[in-house]
Image 1 (tube, rainbow over the protein chains, first blue to last red):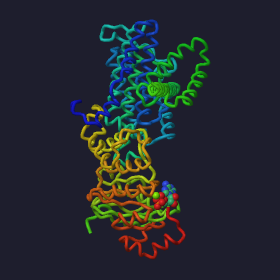
Image 2: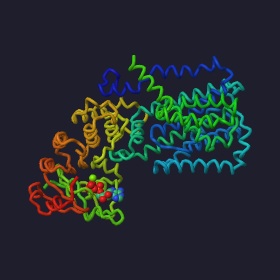
Image 3: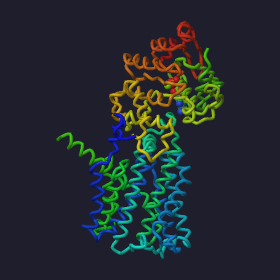
Image 4: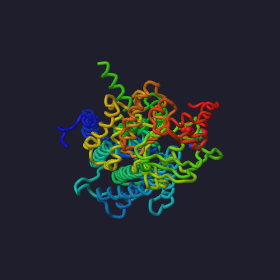
Length: 329
Length: 251
Ligand SMILES: Nc1ncnc2c1ncn2[C@@H]1O[C@H](COP(=O)(O)OP(=O)(O)O)[C@@H](O)[C@H]1O
Ligand SMILES: [Mg+2]
């Protein structure tokens, strides 16, 4: 159907999902580090990876209302997959990343059958349990994962046979940012589709869904698998760009951090995880220079302040501010 | 009598020692409007939960037309044509009325699995949803989030969501609950204007409304069907009068 024949209700729905100028500005701004902060490209790459991880959590938490305290399981699984493939002699980045995606997707699909049966507190406990289980498994399988020492000997080939992963992070940031952008386009499409509407339905009222004929468990299994794939890609990126994998990629702290990041930025608004990752990672980089032991003190304070004063995160606060400014003008 | 649209056979349900359904034999013919009445706590909502699959009966069977649907999940029963509304608004607060009804239509048409094309591209579903909202006089506020709608409009949206599933049987759990008496007649005129292809069973406490809109009335007390009959028969029935005048307040 062409835009010229859209009916009034269709145009209304179309207007809600149209690209906004501020979105274009955001993506253009992600290129600024190349020009203004060339010494921070390694950090920028890690931010892009964390943003991708937070975006994947947003798909399940922000859209389908599935709270997870074990999302690092898929991140770490992707990380080890990509790392091990490179260690075993196949260092080609894109196929390695695809392998990480598939591995995390399979794990996500398998666990989604449990996830789809539960909600609320039970779900938190189950995701937490799954995360701890996998972390402990990786710890015990030291012969495979390198245990507490981390996975050593990961050597990446040049990207497209041309771009070396250098110390300055130029290739790393370009690579991570491109993958993040592609994943974002995919997530944006998905959210604005009928399937995305069904996910919002589950978040808004899981009781009503079956009463309108909606098979919520099938929807949940699908989005959970997609989110796991995305988390696995993020983990794979980290392994490839840092050429090491540590147990920390699977750890509870990573699951908790990404939850904090998403809530900080604002869940259920696609950019929340991205903005949250920038704030969190930049702040950590700045504060850690001063007094690393106080990091969680400040993050705790920040988190309480955000939840108290900006219940929809930084982005929710900004949106409200824009509305106020507009209605005042 | 027409063929049966919905029937139950020997339906039992207890919560611990509390019997909420006992040997329920309900028969709703195609295209009819039946009222289900009874004092608070009689088990009316529970009966709807049992028939729609939100609760599992301890014993007994549920038939939609000829088909035994006792083992089907709630969403599968909806797909077969059995749908309900809720006594307490059970809506999607942050979705607009248009989005909520479009979602329902998408689920019915099998679009809700597709995640590649944009929602507005499904013009047929959006148009159908909008037409339903127009027919329920909700068009003017259909772009606003549900939680911002007036209470009466939210009650109408309850019905709009049910209609968007294209039901054969519609179970309305106190559709006018909480609506001022003046508006409740208007709400029921919407219900009585529904296509005669839909069989309707509604729970309602206002006897004027019940006598005006129901072809037949089923009276439930303490988890049992006490009596069933035409409005005239029910009005004259001594046992019904006892229930309603014998101290048990209906509300
Ligand atoms: N899930 C439940 N667990 C235990 N008791 C329940 C449950 N649901 C309803 N009841 C009880 O069952 C009885 C019937 O409730 P209900 O069907 O809601 O009555 P009605 O709709 O006729 O007012 C009430 O006594 C109520 O407290
Ligand atoms: Mg009730």
